[in-house]
Amino acid sequence: MTSTRRRLLVLVAAVLVLAGVGTGVVLHAAARADRQNRPQAGGPAVDDGTLTLRQKKRLVFVNGAAGPHRTAVASVASADPKGRRTASDLKCARFYAAAGTGVCLQSTTGVLKQSNRALLLDANLRTRHTFALAGTPSRARVSPSGRFVAWTVFVSGESYSSAFFSTRTSVLDTRTMKLTPSLETFSVVKDGKPYHASDINFWGVTFASDDDTFYATLNTANKTYLVRGSLSRRTVTTLVENVECPSLSPDGTRVAFKKRILSRTDLWHEYVLDLRTLKETPLAERHSVDDQATWLDDHTVAYALPTDGKVGTSDLWSVPADGTGTPRLLLAGASSPAPL
Image (tube, rainbow, N blue to C red; front, side, top):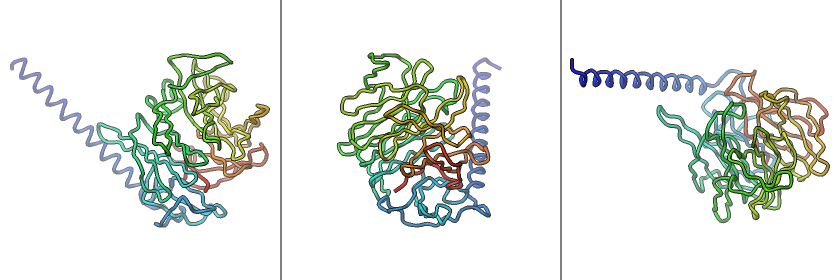
């Protein structure tokens, strides 16, 4: 047998093996999706329906309950979160909405390629514009006025607990449709001095009501910082250390955030920071929270925790923002809440 023929046979065999592996992956994923799309006894009641971001006293979220509406954007009455859910046709990995503007981050995985995109939505969840994403969806936020939208993706790595990861955070002005592809183009002031480094990452944007000020996490030299930024001046300034995934309260005076407990651990506890005094208040939730919390009102924050510790499924919990009380289950099988 000639060496050319041997190489050809090896190549054909390798192609057949890869095809078999790819088919197996697809069949396994399809079987898993089929199981997840079957309604489970005792699960929340979910109905098809019309969903609009102009509705009042509703909580919009990504439905995670098993069944045909899994990953669909859904809503429920804020006063009765355990009541019947209304599900739309829109499916998202991450979602957020404010003032009639929504953002949906989608991720679909094929045999050889993952497709990620951000959808800018109107009040009726119709797509106004689509943007390709550079990586896997992580965080999404809309400013209180609905003018600005931000999203964060993992460009490498799969979570904030990965040994090596990098993120990219983009901001869109929905009035002008001008996209800032990466906050890394903003000037950084750290400890009162201009700061430059090749390892800068941003994530977890949250907007103030003035359509200029925002807060976010800055990561550099293995440390995280809360930064206050200005969209018009394209600058950010560090405020305090060890702050991740900030969420600004409706009254603009406090930030809920996750704080890493002990160095080199993947455990985070939820805190609230008073922006005037920089005093930190630990919240009553003692589980590790790897999420960007959402303020339901000026007194309560909500966040996702894995369902029974299982990766890939989550429930929404809430806790008082002043450190008192106890956590309570808000929505089983849910994530990405946005109060209307």
